[in-house]
Amino acid sequence: MARHIYSCPLRWSDMDAFGHVNNVVFLRYLEEARIDFMFRLAPGDGSPSFAGGSVVARHEIDYVRPLVHRHAPVTIESWVTKIGAASLTIAYEIKDPEQVYVRASTIVVPYDLAAERPRRITAEERLFLQEYLDQEPAAA
Image 1 (cartoon, helix red, strand yellow):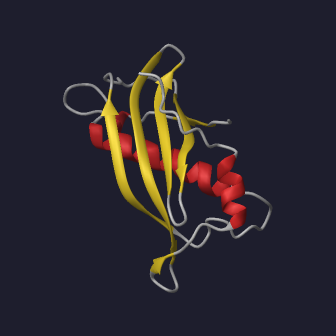
Image 2 (tube, one colour):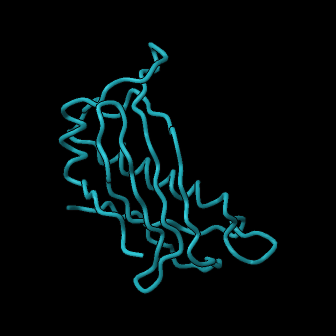
C-alpha cells in the first residue's frame, strides 16, 4: 500500500495567540494534501479523473500535539481507507519522522458540477485509489 507524501510549509500567519498552529489551519493543510493527491497525481495525462469536481461530506480530526511555527515544512501522509460506489475516505497524518501532530480523515464525494449532483466513482478513479488503499487505521 502506497502513501501519498506532501511537504507542507508552515506560514507565520498560521499561528494563533498561543504560539502554535491554529486548529482551523490544519483543515487547510489537509486540503492542500488532498488536492495534491487527487488532482496532481490523478492517473494518466489528460485523464478526466476527479476533474469534474468533488465535495467534502465529513472531516474528523484528532489533535495529538501542538505544532509550533518553524521554517521546515511538516509532512502530511495520505492514504485511502474506504472506497464506496460514490464516496471515498482519505486518512491523514500530519507529522515529522519522530512526532505525529494530527490524525484525520475526510469523506469525499465525487460531484458532477454540470448536473449539480453527486456521481459514482469511475473505474479509472477506483484503480488509482486502490493503489493507496489501507483499511487499517494509523497506529495510535
